[in-house]
Length: 355
Ligand code: GTP
Image 1 (cartoon, rainbow, N blue to C red):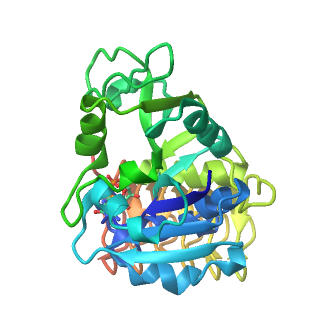
Image 2 (tube, rainbow, N blue to C red):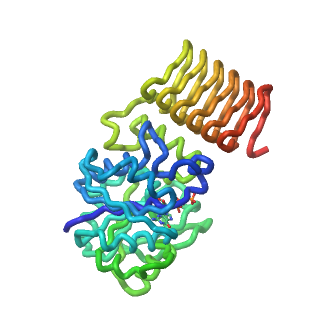
Image 3 (cartoon, rainbow, N blue to C red):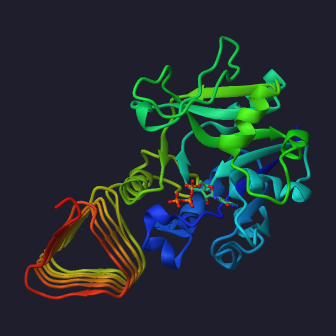
């Protein structure tokens, strides 16, 4: 079995705005490197070297950063969709770049600890047309679920319900027999979840599930994004891009921490950042060049590149866009998003998205 990897990275990442206004979601820094670096390193560690990226939104950014992939021991190719074709359309659109008989497809925003070799083994042993990684989650009511029979064959793709019959959900990683991938209609938008998979089941194709309970997180929302970055830093989520868990903090080159400043909870401080006296950053992601004032508290939030957080400000569970300024003693909480370049004045402005 010769395997190509395909990464779907063409989405607009609307749930992560305003961070995704300047960079596509898979390129946002997590634990100090673009999220895609973690995914690519896991793919390489599984022995797959040819990787095709299906891009659309901000397509050029990927190649500018990763080039031909040789520094990662990979051969990277890029296929651009002028008009986004959806997940199924994006998979079909790279068909002519595949070299092997088997393609392993990845959603570009999933942080997962699945054993990729074991998923490929399941596919091979079942002689399946498609194999899906299905992960067991604590609360399956938030997701569509995917039951399997005693042989591990997928029996249905079910919509979200309050009473799901199984705790297995689609984990966003699939193995396709190449001929099956080529049967997806070309040149139009197709959803692999809503159209391709149900269609394959209806036509009697062998759709297999590879079920596990490994680490799994969809980084689509700000809360999940900061948690994923902290889990990577602390080694809770595995990544072959980090030689060893960094622990409580990752502080990149040129960052300056004044006396009493603390960084905890798997937080990342970007290159050239400045943390004032007694500033506290916990479980947050601070992009390059940001400034956190004296005595400010930043928890479980994302601080955009070159943003400035004023002295004594409190930022909890919030997203601050690139270059935005949060005045001294402001308090931002519970899902507040500040757009890039916005200036909030000093003097105790309080915002809570829930208020
Ligand atoms: P939201 O807008 O916040 O829902 O994010 P998204 O645009 O990334 O959509 P979603 O999370 O559903 O996408 C899952 C994965 O598929 C992500 O890695 C996307 O980059 C990717 N993706 C979504 N739509 C397309 C598309 O039309 N083409 C390609 N190539 N990839 C896509």
